[in-house]
Image (tube, rainbow, N blue to C red; front, side):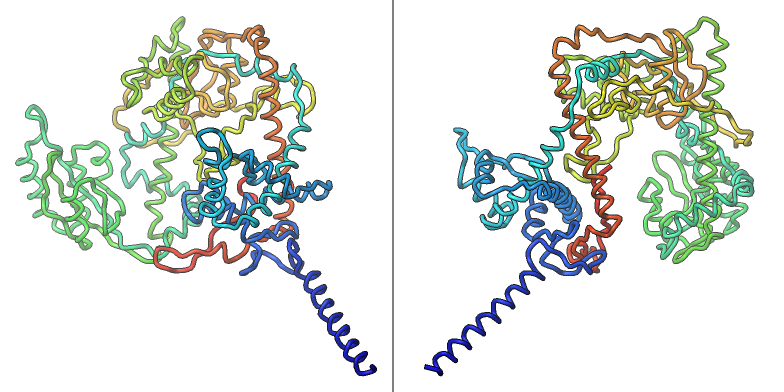
Length: 637
């Protein structure tokens, strides 16, 4: 009996020890709990990313990675991390409020075709059959083939995603909008203006610059600090450089029978130069200044600058092949094409790490041309404004010819495109095509849009928020309508006293007629210039010429208001409820983004968002391990 009791006691003791070990394991390694001594990126782990102490699973990452629309593995990884961060910010807030989701609740949503993704609710693709019935096979294909996860794992992660979506709904439902606020936005957005713009673009003047080495040296002497700063900021570009040649050319264009040389005469002239100058760089430059038929090349002595020895990009295969084998001091044979005759000299060669003195001249040339072309455009705009003022009783359209139709527009002018853009009967697809034509016009109307590197709805530029300065943007999420913000103050554009180099003839600027167009952040012809937009909508009276030149849309502009029209409040009343609902949705989206951004940035600052290190490494084309540049919260603007 005693022996049996001893054996039972021993068994109970072993059982207690085993239970204690399990308890310790659960306390230290329970799901959803990270170790507090982690800092920065984590190594290989069962967690994909830790957000404020909560470890997301590898399954969660797999779903977020497979379901997003990234273009490559790196982009999909970044999107997956941001999706999981967004999910956790919301889900943890839901946890704090005691919200819960069980299997039955999430399955009901799945059978409605819902997929919870980063706090958003989307549709499972192909989940309903042709008769609109939920399809079990489609659901299995979704989690097994598309996401490559098990059914139970998928449901478990969707519970977390649904929790986040519920919290997002609570936050967005807290935003309210009054009818007066919607009316205020309607009045703001539908106040239209018709105006004329004459733009002066630096690129036009840059191509006309006739810059000599003396011009560049003169500019460099007065801007040494700017050159040094540019070298420092771009220093990585001058490390380990591939072989490059400093080239200079003489080009004689083929005559048309009434002017210029024939190809044979041009070839003979360059053959003579080749024999005469030998490897004398100064003589070759002098010959280029004498014989070059292009005014800019004549001024610069045919300078082509530093070109890749592997591919000099000279515009013709024969020229590239002849130039890339040159050694310093050598010239090519005379090469003829349909355009004319060429002779090219290699003045120097370099590679490896380049010091400031080696690249100072080319940096100065780039900065000087940027400065001169911008200044030339500015002076032209100021002169144009003065000329328009002196033309008493004359409008801009009497002084400047209309702009040519953009390429690919079928001969439709920007004025006609603008009218089509504002046609209420135009479809969204048609309006987008028109915007693209206006954006990529040859000289005017270029709208600047950020590149969408990440294809997710929360990175789109068109967030639906009211324009800056509007009554809606100025008001709070729940407050009453506020008056429109005052126009931003701006200083007059004033010419400098810099001495500009010679320029070839420049075609007279053209006029762009715009409108009637509603007020937007980006305006055709005005770009994103708040002062120019304010002048058109708030300051000028019909027929008035703007009192100053504005820096806008990549250049300098002169503006004249033709007409301004106020919207009809009766049009608002026709669908006031829909407008209120639309504005509330816009405000709610903005509020939710702001809420998540604030929390995300605070956690990132305190190193409480820790992506797994193994997810941030990849191999380049040579098989070398490289680190993926990722910072948490980068999806929030």
